[in-house]
Length: 455
Image 1 (cartoon, rainbow, N blue to C red):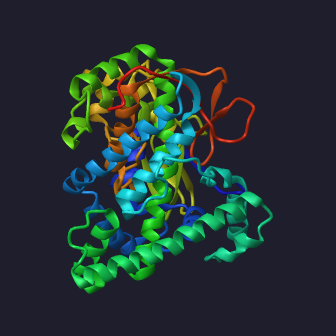
Image 2 (tube, rainbow, N blue to C red):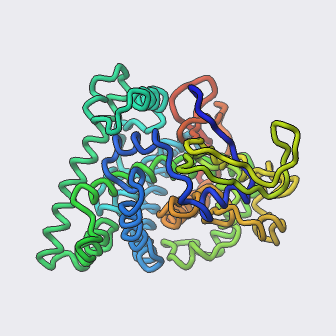
């Protein structure tokens, strides 16, 4: 665009070089760093170099297996409330329900309670919808493009107040509210830790503040960096987790045999009560459904990197260049945009086999193709790129997995899903989202039928 050089990459060896092996040659796109600093402040998404390494080192420690195990009962209890809330919507046994809206609500509540020990939505009454980030991408990223062309390196947040879009202004109000709330909560946790009263709190913010206070002074995050990380975790997780969960529900509604197999597995493991971390992690078909859906339907289709210096990009198999020559590597100048084809790689027949474009969870219950097992792409989970990899991988991917599995566990233990009368389509945006065909707003009506106990 505007004379910029770009290359779209789905080759696993090339991807591994960009994401992991030679990641120092590639960095987040300049536009992306402006956008995320404008949205969240000085967070993990916008930082580079030593600041990024410091932030990431601290944040990784809060998503340890032991911390996830401690958070599971909190998430599971919200899953129970969610299941009862859905039950209350269908007094006559079945009804068309916008399950995307309910996914948004339950994911936000799970993140609020686990990250902040704060309830955004108790799920027991109707609330006004908040704007999601996919409301604003066209206007927002046009504004970022203008900032780039004008040479502005730090776009002030007040610029959004003057931008001619109601959706951008609504989102800006939400960002400001979250920042203000984050400041209050960070200050509360700091006071609690300093007084010794916060030692037993297990939410992510308390753990982060505790670890930060214990770190060497040079490794500590500043007050604004602490607040920015919380804003980043919440916004980064809500949209992607919500839409991934919605995709799983929609896909299972379209595949009744897989849905029934999943239901039987769930009931055999835990027919009543709330699942433990070990139970939710030990269901093979649930795990297969999860892995196959994030492979076939990643919520984010592409990510960009920019070359920081002239570099050589290796490829898996020889390719033909623009002059008709077969080459094993591509020479890239400084400033080239490398578009990482997450969706393209995850569905590559060369890697995943001839059925790569099919949703087939059974593939995870038998040996995967040789290329998946032996040709690393740099992806952090099962050689897929859904959560990316390397020093820019998603730090909370295991927490997202626990959330989504608990939601599926609660839905399919009690309800049967099938397509509603309205046709649902999926839209490509910053994050892929569902809507009724020929409508703009995000929604996903499904027929929900009560078939089991709500205990």
